Length: 157
Image (cartoon, rainbow, N blue to C red; front, top):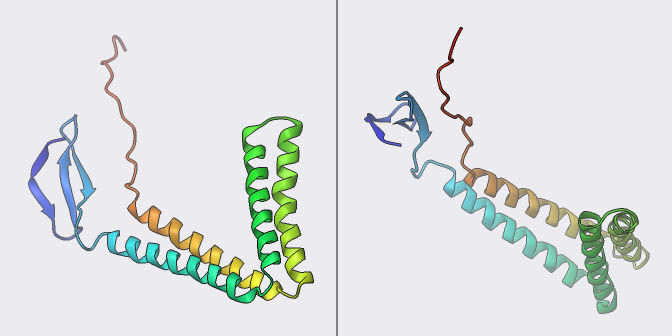
């Protein structure tokens, strides 16, 4: 798309461009005020939240066997989710059941072991990390314009 000679609109920080029909289309310019700085800050915050979740689990569990069982439960939940998404029929049902029961079993194991507070803190940190990571990626995503196509003029009324 060729750029219009109007340049940058200072009031909106948008650049006017011409599309195929010759009308102007405003697009965001890449300046320091755009979401890139916020996206980087949110990505760093997400990494800090993940580090906090790992630190809470490692510091909170003096029992390495329980931590190992928690990781096995996480792997089982991932395998069950994959089965639920990749297969059909009875295998999908078994995968969904495994994806649901494995994390519940890990939470019950942590509660019985007296580590429910560690599990809640780690879960909160993971949730915050996922939220920050999603927000960072959404700030970098360019908006989708309306899809258009050129057509012939009608042959008759």
